[in-house]
Image (cartoon, rainbow, N blue to C red):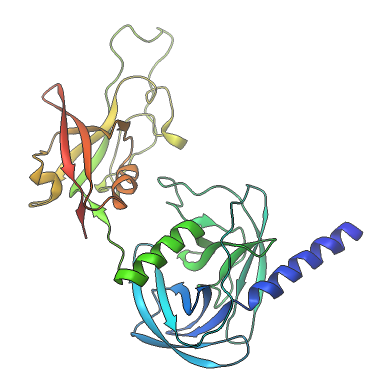
Amino acid sequence: MTNFTDLSNTMADAVEAVSTSIISVRAGRPISGTVIGDGLILTVAHVLHGEEVTVVTPDGRELSAAVAGRDPSSDLALLKVEELDLPALSASSGVRVGELLLAVGRPQHGVQATLGMMERQPTEDGRSRGWLPSGAAPFRGVSGGALVDARGSLVGVLNAGVSRGELLAVPVGLALKVAGLLGSTGRVPRGYLGIATQPVMFPQAEGSESENETPTRGPRGGRGREGWGGGRGRGGWGPGGQGRWGQGGKVGLTIVSVEAGSPAAQAGLLVGDVLLSLDGETVRRPPELLWRVRERAGQSVSARILRGGQEQDVTLVVGER
């Protein structure tokens, strides 16, 4: 029982240490906030309806907080509070799959914690689309709280409103990057090209497969504005985009619409073009395209396209919205 007791004490000590950096936020409904710097708090954006809110510190002080900015994509908001005088959580240097985690929040009744586990690494184009699964059970008021490791280092900022019944977190690296932009400009620019795409696969040349190997269709692909929507694709879109077809002929994204005046339109992209790669890296699925350009507003990217049976390179300047 000694090892179990040591583990229990370690977790309790971590919660106690972290709790001094977790505050209550009085918004549309009770939520938490995580102190990330001198007078700076990260919380969730979707329940903040005004430009000022009241926060309650661990010692019961009620302070006025100004909303410095909101980022709808990550659902994060940055609050600035004068005379906060609370320690900021340090960022985790990285966690491993299988590592125990703690979800710590401060609803109106006081600090609360649940135990989780690092179940899988977040992926930019997978089901969680960059959100970090905490493995912990959500509870009322946990959103805006901290996902921490056993050392009390910040792993992510919690959000119980993204996936029903699942407590996810914005990874700490992204959360701090968003906070920096919100603190300096009040917004987070998002890059876009202005196209809707659908996956397409060109089979291998005749005779390049064994007679006993029959290409098979993978599950439905996605279609939508640079990555979202319903639609039907063709090819080996299994986990990680792998499969016999994905390993054979060329894979790309057929452009099914081009927004007027968009960066894609200005670069001369047309409906029916097939986007094969960006900056030399293959794009297999619409979500990949979304994630590849979203952080590159204002930057130039080189795209290889297939038009009329001929490959050609096009340079685009990623737009901002």
